[in-house]
Structures are given as C-alpha cells and as structure tokens.
Image 1: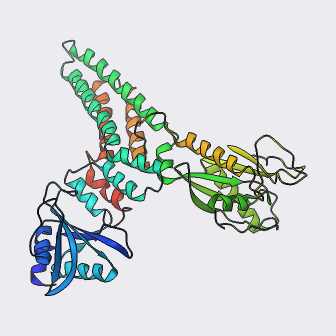
Image 2: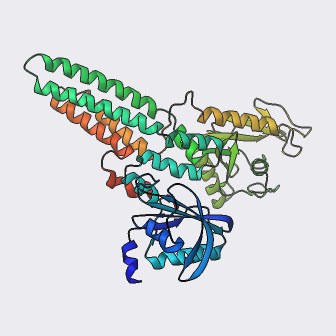
Image 3: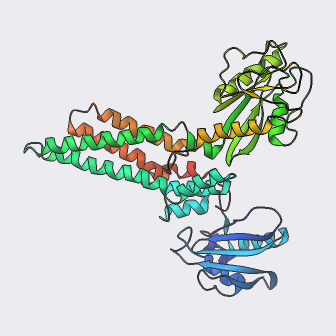
Length: 437
C-alpha cells in the first residue's frame, strides 16, 4: 500500500447499482476522505448536490468520463462525506476505478455498511434501515408499498410512540414511589397502570395480525396438494407459464416439493407442487408424501386439486384446504362437485381459478387500514418480550416492581428502532443486506 493510502482507511466504497454489464454503473464512496478521493481522480470536488461531468484520471491515464455527485456531511445518506461516481457500466471501467480506489487505500464496503453508518450517525432508525433492504428486494407493488410506508417512518412512529408513553407511565410509577405518603402516590399509580394496560392492548392487537407483514415481505406460501395424477404438476406449470415440474401419466412422478415464485394480483406467492397423497409404494414415495403433508401444514394457504373424472375421488383424510378445485372437466365422465371446475388440458376455468387464488391471497395479506404492519421476526420477538413484561406488571402490587416491568417493556421496544442497545443488534440487522446499501 502506498504511504498516503493509510489516511483513507476509514473510507469505504462499493458498487451501488446492479452488478453486470450496463449502460451506467454507480460507485458510492463514504467516509472522511471522500472529498480527497474526488480531488485525486477528478481534480476538484463538484458543487454540493449538483451533478458534474468530469474526466477521471489515475496515474496519468484516463479512466473514464463520468458524472460526479458530492454530498458533504452531515447532509448525506450516511451522515458522512459521500461521493458518487456515475461511470460507464462496462467491466473494464468498473475494475479500473476499483483498482484506483484500492491503491488510494479505500476499503470495500461490507454488506449493509452504508445503511449501518447512517444508523450510527443518526440519519435514521433501524426500521428505516431495514426498509432500505426491503425496497431493494421488492418484486411486487404490494411489497413496494409496504417498504415505502416503513421507510417513511410508519413503524418507527408507532413503536417510538409506545416507548414514549411507557416512559411517561414509568415516570408516574416513580412519582407514586416518591409521594407514597401524601396521597398523590395512589393516584399516580392508578394512572400509570391504566396507561400501561392500554399500551399492552394496542401491542397485542398489532401482534395478532396473522403474520401479514412478514408474509408480504417474504412471500405467501401456497401448497398444491392432492392425489396422484390429479394434475398438480400441470397446474404449477400453467401458473408459472413455463415447465417447472415433470408431467407424466405415471403415478407418483413428483417425489419432492417443487416451488415457484409468482406475482398474484401484486402480491408475492411461493407456490409448491407436492407428491401425490396416497398409500406409498416404497420408502422414497413415503418420504415424498410426508413432505407434502408437512408443506401443507406449514403453508399459509392450501389448494386441493382432485380428479373430477374419477367416481371415487374424495378429499384425502386429514386434509384441510382453503380452495378445492376439480380438474379434467373436459372428460365425459367429469362430475361437478363443490368447488371450482377446471380443465388444464383445454384451459377452461383457469382464469376463474386465478381470480379465486388472487382473492384468497389478497384477503390473507391485505390490511383494513394504512397502519404499518409488523414486518420482521426481530420486531415480533421484541414486542412479545415487551408484552410479557406488561402482563407481569398487571400482577405487581408494589410500585417499585411495577416500575421495573415498565422499564423492561420500554427497553424491549427501544431495541426495535435502535434507541437502546443498538450495538448488540447491528450485526444481525445488516448481515443480509446487499453490498452497496
């Protein structure tokens, strides 16, 4: 490393646009020497927050003609000095710029390090940082809207509101301790308990959402189950509009769970094709049947597909389905039953099935109002911990014990936004971020 490189060691860089060949690639630099990097490569810093077309040179050679942006601290994404290089997207250009930055002593950013620095510098809280990752991963309109609501601070306002009210209730509980002998203590204790009970009810209602926010963020799981040769593999191929599963007249062709990700009405859905439910002929098929039942049990929704041309067709024992569909309506022996009729061979009834599936998914994931949804297991765990402390507070007879329970509840909620114990959870929050975010 060159001697002057050590002064840049705190400064990081990463590709902030998608990898691969493209018309434009964006390289982001953050740290106290970001401005010096601009001077080293472009000769001078551009005017703050104004794009400037510059020629980049390194060791006397022209690297590229690029659009540069300069964001002085603290008014930047990370709260540090930030520079952006909008270069041509070819691999050779990117590698040449990366090489120059490395020689200057900059360090490649770790996953989520830009967002982590933003949190550490007070630019936003942990829930908004998580929303940055969700925005980058959003594939459907519904996912995008949920991520935007969270990025705009909806969850942070809700959780910090509860925390602020708990701290206020805690203050009243402590006042009850300080003024226990002059009649004020009992009044303050009652007021504190009333406030805590109301917050506990609100948290419980927020938790009792059937996992809507998490399912929307990660994708709803829909299992297709049914007996062999009912057409399950044909159905998943039709839904995916491509050959995902092998279709054969031989019963028991599907042995393992095959999953495809779909967009149904703007909602992300993981659809799983499973082995046919019947008495297994061998150990491998038995394992496939076991996995099929396990997939159905763990999925948010289950579609049962049956052969309507079979006179003996019936719902398998122990199966609970959200939607029952009878296939092979094109055959003369088909008998209409309760549920949807479908012919995967001719396509008759397929659009009705899509509409029914979309309605089920929408009902499962749609919220009645615009209130922010709980989106991550980390949030749920912290809220359950807070609720546990508040439930315990109900039994506390002494103000001192009651106050301690309120303190534990407020601390648990504070960990969601990063108001307390932020260093303990930063690694777990940012480890799954993409590079450059």
